[in-house]
Length: 189
Image (cartoon, rainbow, N blue to C red):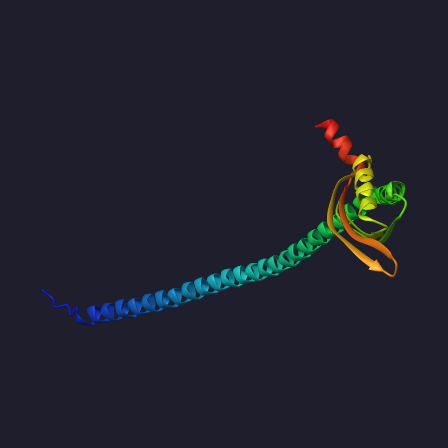
């Protein structure tokens, strides 16, 4: 039998396998690096896109916050204007009342009674004056009580003073002014 030396062939085959293995390993390392690089690039792009969306959302939220603040300011301004309009309407409605008040006070003022001051808070009117006697103050109270525009008179103070030969009574009287709409409200209720 002839002797065939297979060692060089085996040796060449081993070297070829080793070389193929190294090539495959290098190719797989290169492929892994490429896949890892592509994955990192892909995730980096996703992160950048998300950060851009977040920045845009933050800017939109800030814009909306400014709009909300402006709307709140406009709402407060609207409420102030409506309150002013209500006050103006109330003043317009009460304009004739002051005319009725002055007219009625002058009509109900008896002879010998002189007014020195008049102050109104809401429907309460405070009248200060001087009368020739306390009897004249009583007459004023009776006439106020009989009036359709004035009601509920009450004496706060009556002081008799002497100035020279004459005596006079200084007085303070509170009364209520009847409102025009109050009668309508009572009829409706």
